Length: 639
Image (tube, rainbow, N blue to C red; front, side):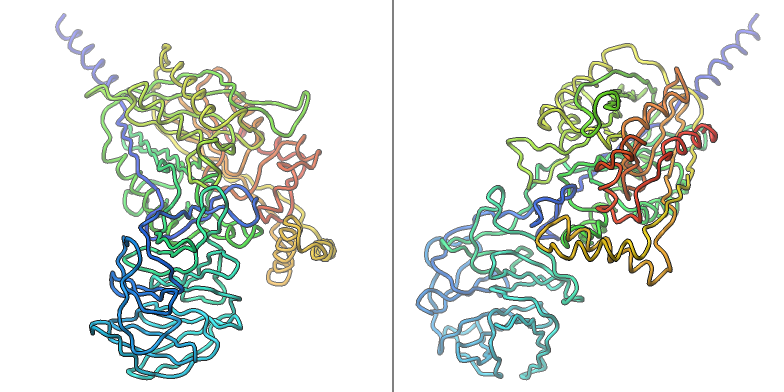
């Protein structure tokens, strides 16, 4: 009798071990750092002037300053009497006057010296260590309006709108025109970028390596988050400083709720590891995600198809993908933010989740929500997938809990207390914070579902609260255990499209160029020129707009991730392929180069089915039958 009991015991242990997962989670902040002065917020083309994170934090009172600069951590300026003054980064009252042997109108700290330009056009230099500034003439410059130093070169803007770069060689300086930038009131530089305050009150920046091509707007007085009328700018101790017309000193800050993050959960069983990552960004390019997966494979040996990366699609996060037909500030991500914050944040979250893995039990539950509505379709076509899927992870060691939850709804609505110029994770972030505090959850990860045509019914905080309540309702019920092996797949579904003919594009371009003041027309000009460039360089624009379908099977829970902005019916149809099973469907995964719409949208030529493809710079919208093509291929693959 003892042998059968022993065998039964061993079998039980083996089965228990076989069904056991090692699960780890991690949260990494991707908040903007001081490495950037301002970031463009994604998701909305309007206002065409741009939405930026730039705000100003008051440091003190200075008195009137017609010009100022920094040398080390000390500021030098010129007051309303034309006198030289000195003050620190937190000034109180009028700045201290210092003696000077001649008046100057422009200033720049460079190396250990002060450089100036007089009203007569003389470039002069002085040693600031002396009690009196004794300026010595170096050369002559004409029409200078502003002056700064990059640490290696001097830069000045002229009254003609030229940007000149000056190279110092001992006591000599040579100048060359490197760009035409229009009317600039003040310049500053951090050694990598040049910042310019235009006469129009708008702040711009450019890469010093590409001074002609890379100018973009980074901020302006918008009446909501940027409220200061600034007169001059200067760079000091890693920050941009501004003096205002009401004689105050400010330093730049990023306006943010402070909740942007990457959240990863890793699942391991046997020798298989799969990772799910939720990122608080509006979207990303395929090449960027591939580079992240390349790095994970190199460091951890995890194949690309085992790592699913999903964007929350908040329209209040910094730009992290290319929108080449938008206004210039939206066309490309800020490289410092993308490569020094977001990319390492994703990689770190994945690695930490793997390293943190402990034996855990998994449970699946489902409910519905009423947070959204179909924003485009009417009557019988106004479908809304109101499903909320929840996966709960409970550590066997200490009973710690993590949660993954998924639904499809656009994070596009602001809140009265958090305006549209403030970086925010929107309702997914607010829901996470409620779930973690109210339900004792260690980490919560949101995955964006098929939200292409679904908008919230109310403000983002009310939406987040309602969604959090729906998730916690699931957690309070009996949830179904997740059991079985891990597998993963990544399939490409080719969708052929017919680009517009060259003649069609040329007519479209001509009509758009007739309305330069219209934002949509400007978009159409950029789109048409992009298509004509394809004809010139490649013979024809792209004729294939592929859809990537990633499938993770974590035991008997199936997660299907679609690329692009899939509309709501895709989720319903995919779940129906496996009736009665645990199937969740996310969009916004791996690549977000356009919408993925159903036939009713395509027939209606609405935003999801037609207009959005111009914004995404695609060769055409999807043809009728795309929905059936995608669903049928998923059915055939049966992953």
